[in-house]
Image (cartoon, rainbow, N blue to C red; front, side, top):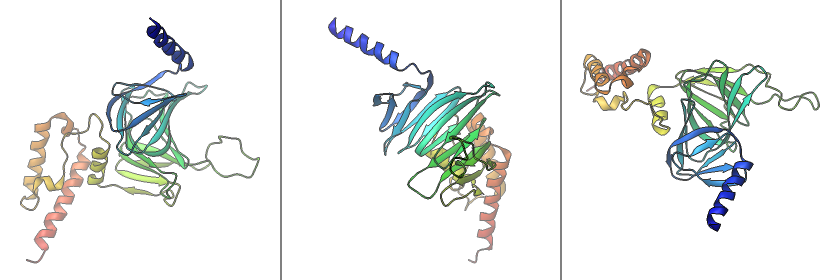
Length: 279
């Protein structure tokens, strides 16, 4: 009876101290993953309910997947991030991830018209309404804040502008206009990167999905080496793509036509190079 009473009071006190709303649910976990909630720190578990203002830290072998509001996060190793929610006077709701360091993928699917998802770091911020992208940041390196967009578009903006002492309020928004990073592109702000934006190849996007997987990713990929291109003609390659689409169903059928055309163009160049090469 005494043990039951102690457990009851422990739960009661924790509930009194931490009354934040639920944020999301852990659906997959590997390695060391720690959750900090107020004065508590504990190991995360699959089906763990996460709360707003929780802080997540992953070890060298740690990773996890989280679902929230029909959206998903895939957090990689050596990452420190916390979550908060803000609603302004106009009713606009912002889901915010404060990234101290590390790397994660955000697949934002079903936000309302008055909802936004934002990532904040020392170097700058990213803001989206619905997209699939990877964020990377390390305060100890000169690479700055980096974003790679798998689908959709991300508004990327540098940190607070520097002003003379006493001329600006704390938390004043940056003065520069945001840089748009769109599908199949990567960009960065801060460090030695500047506001650079460049195109990504299909294989680079496929690598991102493999390193930070999420539910809904295609089970198969149009990897060039998988089709034995040294032995195949371009028309036969196109037929293989169609057959694979039928085999795996809607997941691969949803691949955009422009990506398929990009792959076929790469194949054309490879085959042409082999035909032109001296024997």
